[in-house]
Image 1: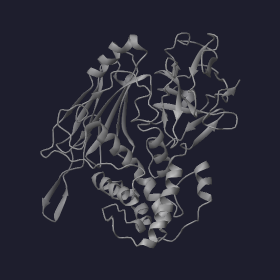
Image 2: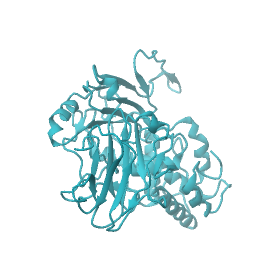
Image 3: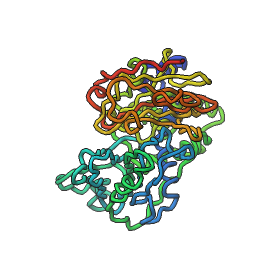
Image 4: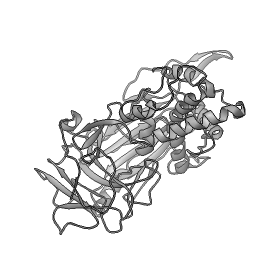
Length: 453
């Protein structure tokens, strides 16, 4: 990465342009900004892990080395995940590899769209299995943690590994988050979707000593508590060797690739610069993830889910859409108005006109979210109104030609599909294609800007 900051583009780079350029390694403000953004995915992942399995996970409890299932479609009360998808049932498992490899299975889906994705705590998608791979006979993947070491004290080396005999992935740390999505077409479809959930499986040998997962802190915690938690999470989840240069650059805040942060090393005169850097970082992270605007939609960047050193994009994405998958698995388009704005507000009725249903081997959906102040998106509490329409909606099944969706406080006289806007506050519109077709993968699919009526 360049010594002047993150590899960022577009609006994020414009935001950074107003900040003082830094080149000296002792610029504490800039180092604090970068370190805070780097650590945000770890903090958010730790929050989700603790919410799922608690501070002292019990073997066999739902969510720890076994799947826990969301049996109802998500609603406004489900706020652990931003941009939660109302047209799927979720199943989640936090896997600890301290006892050896784990094998996870997606059952036969009989044509129903389902996916099983594995993530590290940095938000990278390690592997994804889609329903089309499991439609007839199911599919499985084995996850292998860090290699054991052999030798004598002070003289050890990683134990050689056997060649991969089937689908395997290797991780640098012991923790993996597994998230399965099973498409749901409505209440009438619950039993069939739950049957797919019930056949998800994890096989893993427990560690001899139960793990003690690092506990999260709030994003707005005091800077020393935040960085202390980040350091613990880095120690628990080793970063790739390619990040070594980054850690040299943030050395002024003493967050290290191999440990080193202590809470009480800084002089009072340095604290103001650290606070300023963190304030800048929080503002940047709460902005919408960068992408490429095509017509009235913003396409995600190609490195979504495999961020490498695109740390700002990673932080923005983890905040607004944790568990995001690469665009070739799920393409999520953020719809915009004529001015390029990604949120809407006010009582005016609006209209989305799709040139045709988004091509997808799985299914497509259009979801309305209420926008939080920190950039996150949640399903609105709109009572009997709808927050999502898609390939399963009456009148839109197997439809050809343009699709018109009205957004307002009530249906437009029964004409076409509609989404109910919240009574107050900003909202956003996200168009998703699951297992997208070539027109979307190659960005040939164009959506006109959202109209105000």
